[in-house]
Image (cartoon, rainbow, N blue to C red):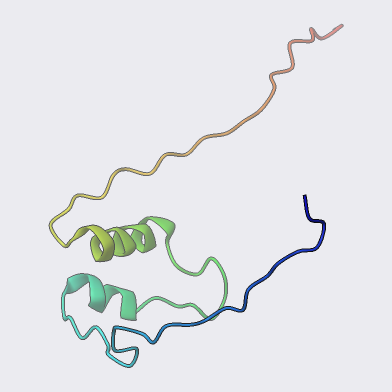
Length: 82
């Protein structure tokens, strides 16, 4: 067993895609996302933002699943003395 670390140098490979290319797709979701206000946090509706991201990743015709909201709490089962 050797206690001396052996860290070979990192060698990067050149990119195989054009890093300057842009997605110029024009659709309803792209137009909707242009109207989002990102100047301050929570200015965009979560539902709309999630739907735009879903459509961009899964495809324009893919239905976005409904949002799931959950709360975690411990009920207080103590009885009032009154």
